[in-house]
Amino acid sequence: MTVRRIELEHPVDLRRTIFPLLRGTGDPTARVEGGTVWRAVRTPDGPATMKLRQAAISTIEAEAWGPGAEHAVAVDAPGAVGSFDDPTSFVARDRVVAQALRDHRTVLLTRADPFPVMVAAVLEQKVTGTEARTAWRQVVRMTADEAPGDHGLRLPPDAERVASIPSSELTRLGVTGMRATTLREVARHPGKIAALAGAPLEEARSWLRRLPGVGPWTEAEVARLALGDPDAVSVGDFHLPNIVAWALAGEARGTNDRMLELLEPYRGQRGRVQVLLEASGITAPRFGPKRERRTFV
Image (cartoon, rainbow, N blue to C red; front, side):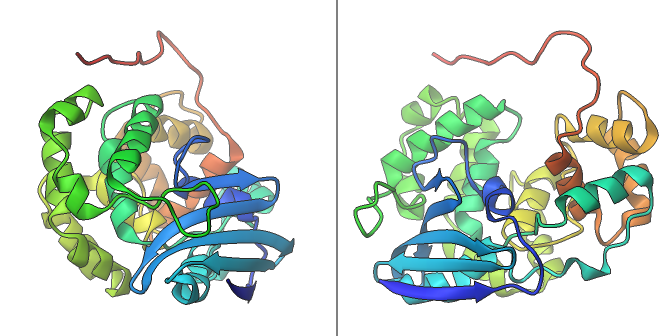
């Protein structure tokens, strides 16, 4: 076991910061117990299981088991809890965002292994959250072994095994058409995707844009969650344009263009505004039927 005490320069809420990296309460790669977060990771040195605990407002205690334990506590744990984020330059320019910042300034931007974030984002393309989380759980169970330390977690998906999932299995999970093609394409480039973590942001985002099947939404999800990009706003999201339009203009419905227009004063920090608004739980008024869950034969 390897132990490290992480002292951040900014206050952090461990659970709320790391929440976007978790894929629902049934995520086989992670578990939350009170103020403690368990997370399985793959590192250049091998697999590891991390245990992260909030010790103080700016202090996280990290423990790790497995061949990759040293890397996990030195790189993965600090990234997951927001150590590499710098929110000091952010300036709220309207009342709603100012309130969100006051209430949720401890929600920081994460950095993580881009490959599992990318797989999860592809599985989330144009489907409901329930469908995406179900697919994630099944893909993990089909492509990953148990994580070190006998803590009941599984590792994130293995690229080679993702690429070998039969089409019939993907169809059963509801992963069809372009999503299935994109998933296989992503699985062909695990090394290049992992290398994005050390590349300049614009270079990394440019590479993502050239990957077949990766549009603005997927690019932004990976850039914000895995690369810590404060300007990565999820264009094409089903709910976000309405949230932004309602929060910043009092408009019950918004388009992607309207969302970007309203966020323009925050250019460079638009992704942080998204995180703050989502953390605030702001939702636009609902009209009409809910989006139905689809079924596949």
